[in-house]
Amino acid sequence: MKKYILLTLIVFTVFQLTAKTQSWTQRVEPTFWWTDMHQSEFQLMLYGVDLKSAEITINYPGVTIARKSETDNSNYVFLYLNVAKGTQPGKFNIELKKGNKKQVIAYELKKRRDGSALRKSFTEADAIYLLMPDRFANGNTQNDSVTGYHQGVHREISGARHGGDIDGIISKIPYLADLGITTLWTTPLFDNNDTNYSYHHYGCSDYYKIDPRFGKNDDYLRLSNVCHSNGLKLIIDVVPNHCGSSHWWAKDLPSKNWFNTWPTYTSSNYRMTAWTDPHAAESDKYRLTHGWFAPNMPDLNLQNQLLFDYLRQVYVFWIESANIDGMRVDTYPYNDIKTAARFIKSIRDEYPNMNVVGECWIKTPAEIAYYQSGNNNKDGFDSQLTSVMDFCLKDVFSATFNETESWDGGLARFYSLFAQDFVYANPNMIMNFLDNHDIDRYSTAVKRDVNKYKMGLAMLITARGYPQIYYGTEIMIDGKPGDYQGHRFDFPGGWAADSRNAFTSYGRTTAENEVFNYLKTLLNYRKNNTVLQSGAMKQFIPENGLYVYFRYNNEKTIMVIANNNTDAKELNINRFGEMLSGKSIGTEITTGKNFDLQAPVSITGKTVLVLDVH
Image (tube, rainbow, N blue to C red; front, side):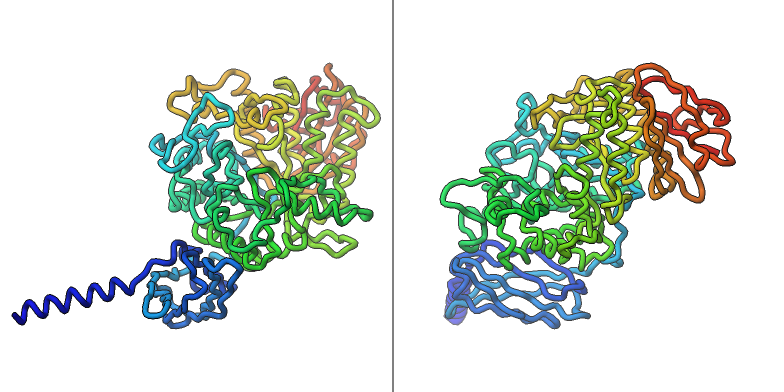
């Protein structure tokens, strides 16, 4: 009888405890955090059922709730937790109570990686390789299609997913290191469950989740580790302007002003010049910053401080957890730029050595220079972007080698552009590129002419600034002009079923190997010679279709000679005495051929010579 009574009491007690224990909270973000961060306070977002009415307590030495912020949506609570210096890593409970009912949520503070805050970032010494994970290499066919995700793999459709993933990227890191690449930039890896065109991942649907069709969260760190063990750094693509319409927020917005909304769909006017236009209408700026980038990309309102803090922490979380080395910022001027600057600074405050390159797709050097940190802007604006992308130089590359020489055409385009470098705070920290994921392939610009293509590569690698190579550029991969999907073709050999493997010399055509070996030689020379990383640049006015510039420092002098004529020309060396005094030989770094600098130099048509002069 006593045993029966005891058993009844135990069952009753368990029933009572179960009845009082609830599961109101569905999400807690960030999923974990660290001790000893520069900013001791961090935001913890809780989402569930009527959390606004819950009493929330934490009992852990060194951790206190600084404040509790709420919105017009009672399902969200934003806790600001203060983690005192010296707080020990460990697990603790967050307890929510409503009357006599409660929920207990386990949370963890991890130990921060030693030296994390002062990690080295990419610099002008680096050569960056940009790839779209879905189009590069498929290392795990088991994640091609995932239950609950709208899109699986259909390689026959240009705008569908093709199956590239993190395992595929990892398998090719030694290939990139051998090519001479020192930094990897991937387009975003976050979850993107759009019904169409999800492969590009610029429409995030969950910031704390690597898309399972790419891999798992831990795979991002694994990619970083493999990069580092092969001498590469890793850049994260930061997208502060928009998320995806498939984001879980869209079903229950944290607040009415979380997104910038309009009575009917309104796109941005995309006119970034409005920021530097002294005569700009405020309505144009408003449309630029509040209009949506695309119908499936809700415009984020970073002037909402809760969202600002949330998104800041997203990127701090991934930089810390995946040991990231640098940032690229997407569509920077589509945001309110003062807010964007504050946003980037808030991340760089945590990582003071972190370099950031911004996408500011504008067509004049003065406008681009406005966005490089340290520029002496009349309005005092500082973007916090240590680097910018040179879209003007990209246009010069696309046009020059197809043109007949003239006063302002052909090689004069390079001369005129570089002559405007005075507008930049730091010309060496400018990202140069021939193409990327948003523009036509350089191969189509020069109509697959190998000589013109190599001219572009030579000047890309030897000009001031640092080069960005888009995946496939090393093999002159084909494209389809005017079509987004046309410059996002799969890398041949990235899939087991491919008919050839262009990651290997025997899988490349004769022309592809010529281009690959040429670029590899240039990149590895640059990697091992500071003169092409941070050396000064001196240029001479083009004459007779010949353009000459030098890169030089205390150790070396490099002479670059471009002949844009179709026939061979002789270059009179006497004109360059100020740079060649005491030097008599120029060794072409891609061929090893020596040129006598005491006599005129003959240069084949549509050729660039890169001479190590001594």
